Length: 203
Image (cartoon, rainbow, N blue to C red; front, side, top):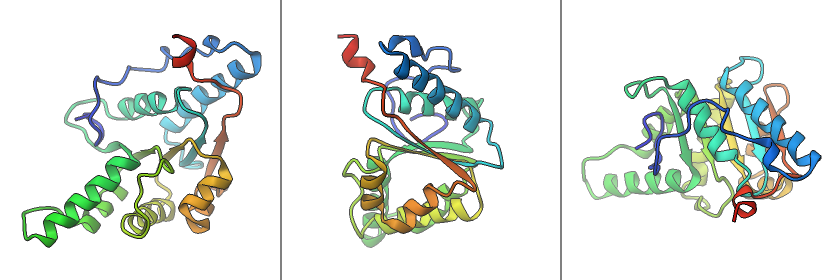
């Protein structure tokens, strides 16, 4: 388990942000965009009360997830401090269903709605891979809406990551949720258009 989150990882996130190398990209536009991505995530990690929401939309392999994990790791300095969390949409969907199934079967478990409210109370939260087809319509989407709504209402630091375009993400989540994510009074939406998959470039 990630000490500061809920997803199983192969290794501890890289400490700090110096590992992120914008110069790996081949074009000036991509390098500039990579610098903006890194700076924006670092600024979010400072948990500015003026802009607690950040939504990052871009292609696969550009470093969105790794930067987010580093940000959460930075916000959680010890193994025993679990006030900030990183979770993928797939893990969110799985946990909601597992908790609900355990409750229905009479097993000892956590009420899924109680768990969502606990997650909503995290000091900082990253939800990754939204719109990758993991969120079950109707079953877990309403709980995701509840999670976003609670964090929006109390203006808690929340980072949303997706590979979808703004229009497709709006279609996936619904206009109500997307409106909260794109409310520029409390957050920013960063759309990455020039960066390429660095993993493909290194092959």
